[in-house]
Length: 522
Image: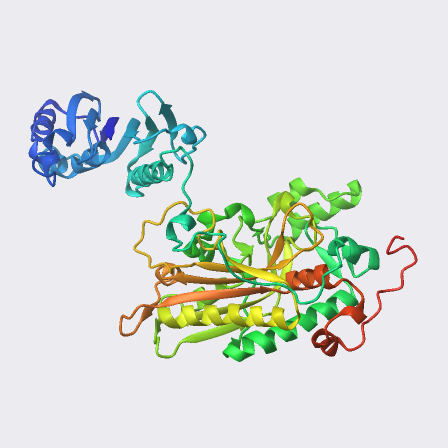
């Protein structure tokens, strides 16, 4: 790397000729900038290639290699200069300013993939001939240097470079972590009966009035028949899977503060996949203007509403297990007394953008979420049990499924690198899919159960420790109620008489849809 800095040290008053002599003495003391530099690497240390005095400013041009980098050098000069001139000349240093700072980072391979890289607080330039990227900072001061924005930007760019393989394609942390190749099928079950139903369950649900599209994208109103079926699956999953493992039910919050998502590193991996929540300002008079304009114009004045909202402070729960990790934030635990919690108290929210079309991929959905914490072998065993019992339930219902190694564990999704010393499991995620016979072009399944082990990822992020300093892991399994129902209807259809007794016993008598003259459309 190469660092070239043009900056200045600003003093509290004009620099006298006597003060200049003392400052020059400091600038000529090479030991100040060589301190801590390994033997043999002196040429890479910072050098002051030019300086001049102008009024109350010492203007500096500093270059360096990797060691005692230029921005560190200008800060390092501050203390010895003050010791030299502070008391004698009764002057202080008011500020440090960097007018222009160019950092060149070489890449070992093609950097075309960084063409559109944007780094906050600075500009970037690609030199494709030399396979290097230049970071350019302009007009930064002492406060920015103390916040380490330069070092963070360098680390960010180096990480992006590391994420580009020799082929020029971006790396994926999931593929680096997994001991078994993602998408590998590890178990499957073929239905014993002949599956003849082949209609789209979303289209049929709408025709029959079991659901109705809500006004929000990716949202549905589930009418009594669909709700009854959904609750039947909820009961079955609790009885046949979760209760057999011994989870204790809790009620998890669904409005998650941004700092919790930050500690989870979810904001790094999938920031575009969440609904952000902005609390309103408590100002009735300002809202009165909003209401008045709405009444006069007969439309919602969004521009005015934006001004009445505070900055986003929360997200709607996108993973459902977030509160579990916050509950144990910086707590001492005992892995001899492991924890198994389950939550089924409300909706989960994901922003799928244009990917939301049918009932199998929605923005608002119901799940049962199990979470466990304990020793690695305990967490792995519980995760495997959740998957095993889910598969047994599918077989009891004669639902055709397969289970594969997941290629998108939620806590690694979108992540390119992990710089912490995190312990990862051999398989971070298993995903169980129910076959969708109506999809003709490919053998497609809907993911109904996602069984994850996180290793020490969340333990590290939330500062959780065992009181004997033993290794603590976490894991979670999500049972998608909406998706279990869609997978069931895709294979069995909507005729109650064709359904297995296990489901009919739970439902009893099917309820009717609401009597509305104009709906559902025939």
